[in-house]
Amino acid sequence: MPRTPGAQASPTPRFAPAPQTSPIPPDASPAKSANPLKNFQYRAIGPHRGGRVGAVTGVPSQPNVYYFGATGGGVWKTIDSGVNWEPISDNFFKTGSVGAIAVADSDPNIIYVGMGEETVRGNVSHGDGVYKSTDAGKTWKFMGLGDTRQISRVRIHPKNPDVAYVAAIGHLWADNNERGVFRTKDGGKTWQKILFRDNKTGAIDLVFDPSNANVLYAAMWQVKRTPWGFESGGAGSSIYKSIDGGD
Image (cartoon, rainbow, N blue to C red):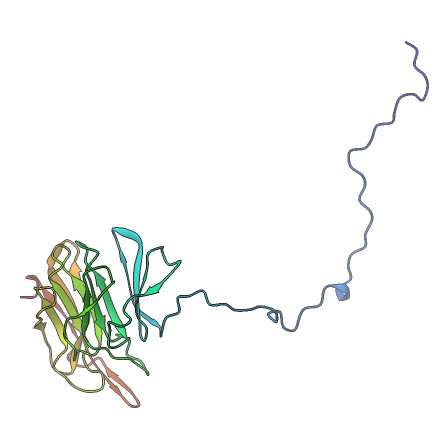
């Protein structure tokens, strides 16, 4: 078939040439704001607790459950990995400063809380001993050791929740005898002082050997607060070991 001149359409280019632009001169760039956060608003994301956090623990068998203790707000609990927090010690605790929290490995319903923050600082809040819950924090009962003032650590035997240990710093502003390491074998009904250095030295830390709960290590700390500072690291400061559960 004969071709008609001019009947064939011209091909359409796939890309059109970009329009020519000139570079923006330096003095034409957007001006920087003198206050870039002027319209920024802070919002609290919780939890609304009193004071700084001094103790935190989780529950290995319940990965979404955690507890923390504040220096003025008692114990708080989350069951959704921290999305929501609820205060669970109000109307049970006489003081609000928490130094240590421990959940029993063998029964997560059993919780021991040692009162009185372990942080020795300019303003420090004292506590009033040990509290215990047997229903995962719904209710609490006072278990004694009221004159320890500052409790730094609580450890629960991994297989027997009736056996628990408390490391107590004691009074920060004066000498006292209710300090050191204490043990209960009856779920907190009675306590025995199993490690005592002197009335100036308390226990700052306590840990089980992971492979043998009869082996414990305790760190003792001689410390005293004064109106103008604090004295730390005296002759009583030392590390102790027991291979018989504190006997």
